[in-house]
Each structure stands twice: as structure tokens, then as C-alpha cells.
Length: 186
Image 1 (cartoon, rainbow, N blue to C red):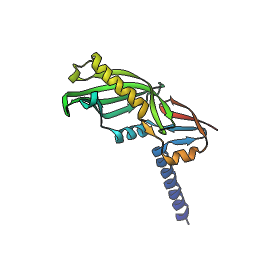
Image 2 (cartoon, rainbow, N blue to C red):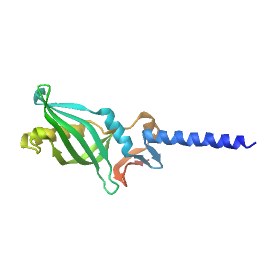
Image 3 (cartoon, rainbow, N blue to C red):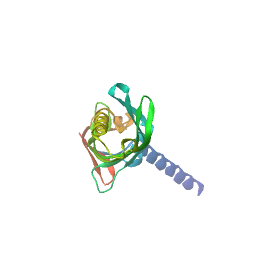
Image 4 (cartoon, rainbow, N blue to C red):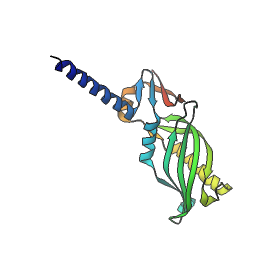
């Protein structure tokens, strides 16, 4: 007789854990909000990098890789750091360095994704560029950041989440208490 309640309890625990892993994979829909955590955004970035961004007709390229994302609990902006290298003629120029930025996020219905909003370059340490940015290097990095912000989402909402949102409209996007929050409006 005691086996049935234990079996039921085990089945219930399995269903709860399966539900939690589903939420983790696609965002938690809680009433009029959808939330995303740092690990969710980090996994999306890991799948999309490294990347090369050609400039000046392909003679120069930035190679960005190893993205590292954090969402400070006391900030409305995320932090994003990349390993960055300079390529010329298809070859690496010098040692790769690091590039860090902070940014808000916005939802773009065209890409169904979360894009950087008003990013700020926080630090650059690229030995190939002498450790600091000269004017042409800063322009190259700024051009990449402008293009990336406009064209490429940090995270794309999947079809099942969009179906769960249904006819609700995403009214605003914010970062609160260490999570990304999409506020929905009926």
C-alpha cells in the first residue's frame, strides 16, 4: 500500500523537474512577465561565437570569441566581455586581448530577439593594438558594436515561448535583480 504514494510522489517530482528544465531552456512565463537568466543568455552566446567581422573590404577583420556574460544584481545593465583579435590578410595580428562592454537590452520583433541597447565600451586590452585604442581601432570596434547592436540578437525567443505569449505584446524590456524581464501587455 505504501508503494503507490511513493510512486506518485516520485512521478510528481519528475514532472516538476521536467517543467523547471523547460522553463530554464526557454524563459519563465510568470503572469504578465517573461524572465531570462544569465545562464540562458550565456548558452545562446556560446552557440553563436566565435565570429569574424570583416571591415575595409575584407582586408581587416575582428575575431570575437569566448563571450562571458554577467548580470549584476544591483544594475539595470548586463556586462559582456569577449576575447578579441585582429586579422589582416586572413592571419592573426599579434596576441588576442579582451573587450568589455555594459548594455541594456531591447526586444526587436523583426528578429524576435533581445538586442543590446545603448552599449558602452567599458575596457579594451588588445596587445596587437598596443593595449589601448587608437582612433582607427576605436572606429573599427565602434562600427562592429553598432552593427552588432542593430543586426544580431544576444538571445532569440523560441517558437514555443512566442506561442505561450500569444497575442500579448512585449511592452518593455528591462534588467531587474539579476534577470532579464520582458513585461507583457494584453
